Image 1 (cartoon, rainbow, N blue to C red):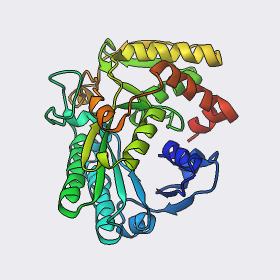
Image 2: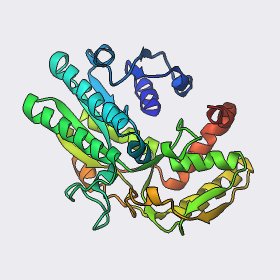
Image 3: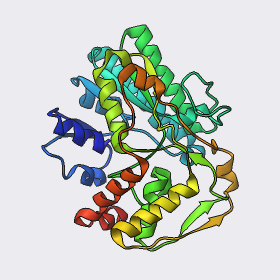
Image 4: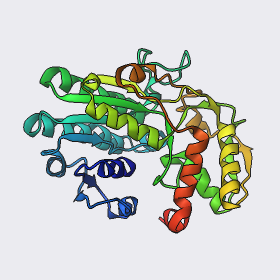
Amino acid sequence: GSNLAIKCLELGAKVTLLTHTYKNFKNIQDSPKPVTIVVGNITNYADVEKAVKDQNIIFHLAGQTSNVTSMESPELDININLIGTLNVLEVCRKTNPNAKILFAGTVTEHGKAEILPLREEQKDDPLSIYETNKLIAEKYLQIYHKAYGLHTCCLRLPTLFGERQQLNSPRFGITNFFLGRIWKREEIKVFGDGKFVRDYNYIGNIVDAFLLAAQSPNADGEVFCLGTNRQILFVEMVQEVIKAMEELTGKKGSYHHVEFPAGQSKIDVGDTLVDYSKIKEKLGWEPQVSFEEGIRRTIRFYQGNNRFEEYLSN
């Protein structure tokens, strides 16, 4: 969200942020101009109304984002991902029906893929509470588009990495988490043989997709899968992260293999590769920054102003 907000500011937009905590304000400390901050919770209707009732474009990126956490605390996931989404939609229906609403889903709503690469028309078979609720929220947006004419669009996101992401927990982004491990000279754990496929996408590419969808009427009522259509083995990602960190910071990394935790293996979707041809055809989007370049841009961001230490301290 912070990456998208800063890009919007650079393009001249007036930006309002709804955030539930002050601790993430560091993410916008280098923004090119001031933003309006609403401190509140997506689960509170009044907070949502204050933030979005007068906005032209609403990027709904607030959410509980861990499939593991969703299985541990399903009510938490329901409150944030379902009630929160309904709050956004109801505020818009009642007070701001002309707003464009962009929603962040996940490609893992498909579940275990029968055929790769994934495409929008493939059936959905989510494996966790998180992915199920993301799918339900996506259906809410489509219903509000059809029933009330709201301008909604859902973007299903792949495995993301990039600037301003947390470094302390794999539940908020495994690639950035590994960067943090190397910085702290801690060995990386690779589940199993690491030879499962993921589709890694740099946050700058995702920001571009949201901006295109926000401006195009061709996105109304649509669901788009975002990816790179480039398969990278998990262990190859780890090796590239280690290589880039040593190249740019001088810190050497290492990894070892461990057994896949039983509880997580049951909700893991397995190989993931995403075809982005639909959004390319309708909106002209395709990823501009490669995995390798994205990793290096991310490392350079954390190198600046001691951000590795700052983002690892929280």
